[in-house]
Length: 98
Image (tube, rainbow, N blue to C red; front, side, top):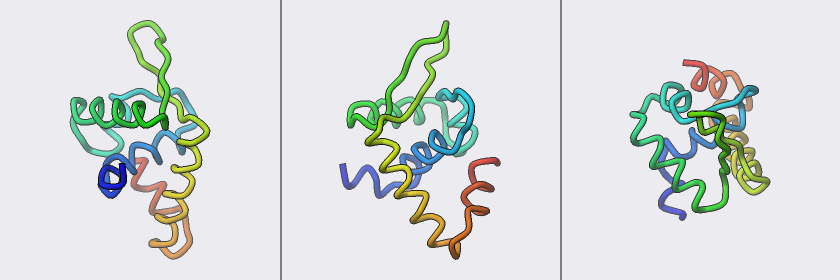
């Protein structure tokens, strides 16, 4: 699990789910973190296997949300990203809103 989370895209996927105030699904995440849909689906599947993300079907869409453990990890990653940016959320927000 450690090797997986030392990669940028899984971290940004978790943070994106945490920071998004609306229902979110894989295609939205792939656009926000600038990766392919297939890669995003694979990343989200791994996050689900690890118990950090859960999904529910809404018609054809698969709505994603964090588990309590996923929220804890995402919050830690947000804190770490903010520390790298001098304690502000602006860079994290900018990255997620591209």
